[in-house]
Length: 201
Image (tube, rainbow, N blue to C red; front, side, top):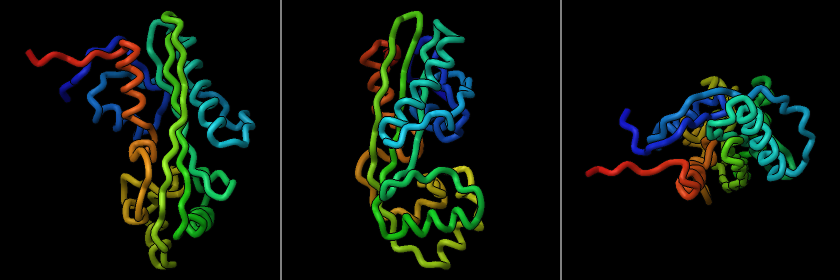
């Protein structure tokens, strides 16, 4: 794939195939070195703060090991009525999540962090997107559960997959719902002179 940016060594501190896909589609060259921090040890109830702290910890974990590299960390959660929806553990769990989301607006929060130890650079922020689900019938919920798509997704759905039919409307960043607010991440990398657009001359 043709790369459209000139970058120093860039690392994505995540094993998420969706984040990898988004950065590849944006034309960035990068390595993948997932962070293995204990996410359960972060006990922060506020969703906006939680994803930001987790993104920071993931990025700094890898930046400590690769101090000359620029590291991107991220964390995404689905939030509805003061409840965080993680990845479902069973069909029943997925069914309950989809029933909660049906005909309701929920929020998707993604925290992202960009850091480079050698450059003494550390930045993090959170992006929120409102997502409205259609009114789901029991048949639709059962069909979707049996596709197996919900089972490694926060909130039990993938907006970029078969789950696109569940979503009536979004307000905010689409890529944020997929797992990484690409516009904001690349905007920060450009303004920080981490990536430079290639000349076509």
